Figure 1 (cartoon, rainbow, N blue to C red):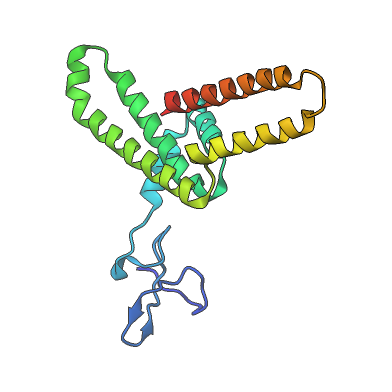
Figure 2: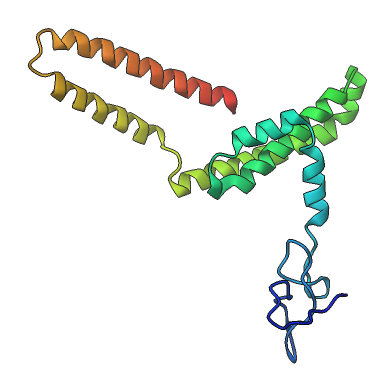
Amino acid sequence: MQRVTDLADPRRCKGAQPDGQCRNVAEEGSDYCRACGGESQAPARRLKEYFLTKAQDRARLVQISENDGLKTLREEVAVALGMLKRRLDLAETDADFIAAFPQVEKFLKRVTDLKKSNLFLEQKSGSTLSRDQAFGLVREMIEVVVEELDGIPDYEQIMDRIVTRILATVQHAGKAEADSE
C-alpha cells in the first residue's frame, strides 16, 4: 500500500486511525484507501471507456449528456443502453436470445432503475416541467397572445389557428417523449 509523503496531499485517505488521519493514498475514484474500505473505480472507468470506443456510443453519450448536474447519471444510462444493444445484436437465433435472456433482463432492470433515478433527479432539480406546469405555461402564453392581438379585426380566428398549432406542438412533444422512453 502506497503512503503519502506530504500530509496535505489531496490523494490522502480520509479514513480515521487511532493516531489521526490515515496516511495511505486513497484508491482511484474514492476518498479512502483499500484498508479503510475504499474501492478503486479504475476498473469501472476502464470498462466504461471500452464501451465508448465505438463512434455511435460516443455520439449517443454526447446527445444524452446535456445537463452538467446530471451528466454522470446520463452517461451511465448511455453506457447501459449501449451494452444492452450490443448484447442483443450478438443473438443470431432464438436460442441465442433465450440463452441471453438473463443478461438482457439484468440490463433492462438497470436501465429502468437509472432512468427512474434520472427522472426523479431532473424533477427535483427543476430541469423538467410536470404536465400541469407545462399546460399552465401554454395557457399563460396564450393569454399573452390574446392580450396583444386584442383590438385587431378578426383576432379570434387568428387566435384559434395559434391555439390549434400550439396544442398540436404540445401533443407532438408529449408523444415524442413517450416514444423515447
